[in-house]
Image (cartoon, rainbow, N blue to C red; front, side, top):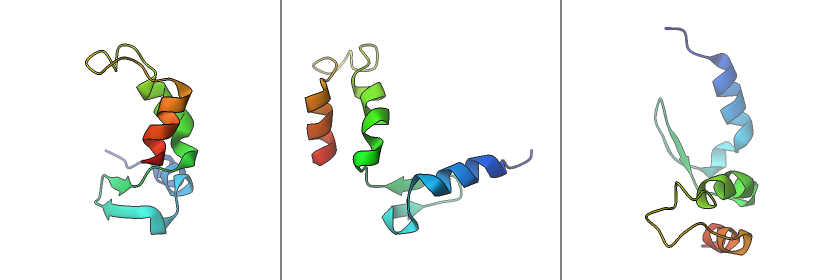
Length: 68
């Protein structure tokens, strides 16, 4: 199977190398930042995803989650 160069190029643009906490061949673990707000909203504001939690988050609650 061919490795996708496109995926690597996209992931390198998403964050700076200094932000990486842990890196493996298939994973980059990094701290979330303000640039992740919209992606985090898609997850935390989805009723199906958050069914086992206290419910979907508001924009303010997502920002509080991100600020932690």
